[in-house]
Image (cartoon, rainbow, N blue to C red; front, side, top):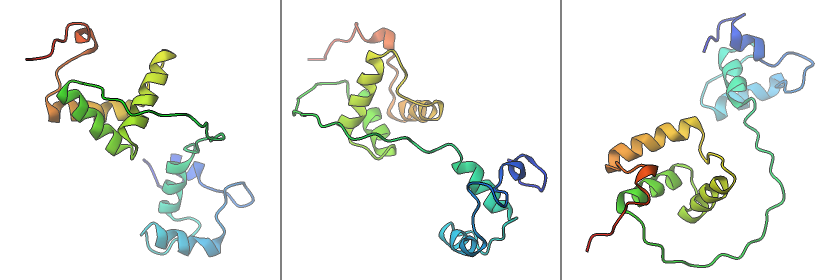
Length: 143
C-alpha cells in the first residue's frame, strides 16, 4: 500500500466535512487503541486504517431461530481436522461452519473467500489432506 501524501491511500482518507471524518480529539484515542502512538489528521496510519476498514461492514438482519439436534456424523479424519482448524480460525463452532458450507452449496455458491481458500490449502497441507471433490463417491472406510 502506498501511504505517501498524494498516493492511493491518501486519496481515500477522510476529508474535512465528509462522512467518516475522525474528529481531531478522537485521533489520540484511535492511535492509543490501535497501538500506533500519537496521530494527526494527516498521519499515514490514519489513512491506512481507514482504507483497511472501508467496505468491511456486514449488514446483519434479525437472527433466525432454528431447532438444532445432536448428530453423530462419521467423517474422514484429516477432513475433520481441516474443518476444525477453519472453524477455529473463523471463531465459530464446527456446526455453524458446516451449516454455512451446506447452505452455500445448496445454492451453488462458494462458502469461502479467496483468502480463506488459501488458508484452507495451508491446513490441507499441514494435516495431509489429499482428497478432492472427485474422490467423494469412492471413499470406503477401513475396517
